[in-house]
Image (cartoon, rainbow, N blue to C red; front, side, top):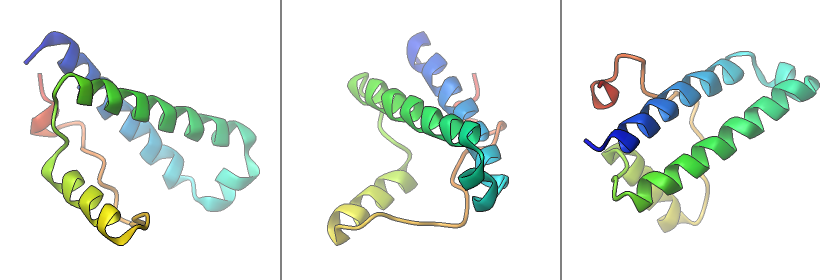
Length: 96
């Protein structure tokens, strides 16, 4: 694996863990804490930018994400889930 891609995947893993921490604080905490909202926005922007860089590098998204994207395109709606799809720190696809 290319070193830049590996490094980007490690960043994505860490950002997903941080995003999971934001979600774990709950909706009320998020809506009443401007700093938490800024952190959530920043993480989403970082993840989106990383996804673009990985796509340009030819990295395919994990199969489960591809399926969700196809479902969203087919239905014309966004997908909401209560179960986290963030990889754990020990995820084999992100190990170096």
